Length: 163
Image (cartoon, rainbow, N blue to C red):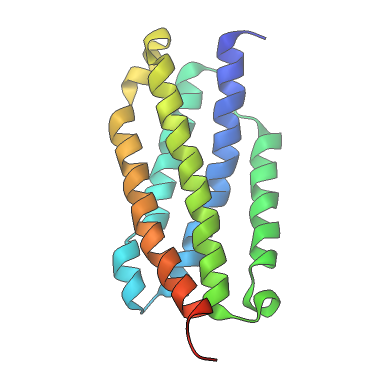
C-alpha cells in the first residue's frame, strides 16, 4: 500500500467520523435550542458540515476515492450513540446533553489531530495546499472551546443540582 493509499484510508476514517459528527452536532443543537447554552455553542453543526465538505474535497483532490464501508461505519456508530444517550436511557435530559457534548468534543479532538497530521505531511502532497490547514486547526480549537462550555454546564446541571 502506497503512502497516498494510507493517507486515503486515514482521510476516509475521518469522513466516516465527520458524518457521525454532523448528526451529533445537530442533535446537540436541538437539545440546547432556546437555552443560554445555544448562543455559546453557535452553529456547530454547520461548522462540522463545512469541515466534512472540506475533507471530502481533499479525498477527491488526492484521487483516493471514498470508502463506503467507512462511511457506513460512521453512520452506524452515530445511530448506536444516539440510542445510548437518549433521554429514555439516561433518564436525565442534562445527562443526555452532557454525553452528547462530550462525544462531539472527542470527535472534534480527533478532527484537530487530523488537521495537525495533514500539516505535518503537507509538503509531500501539493493537493493539501488547496485548504488552509492552520485555519481549520484553529476552528477545531474554537469548536472544542464552545463545546466545553456546553459540556461543563450540562455536568453542573446533571450532577450539582438538587433533585
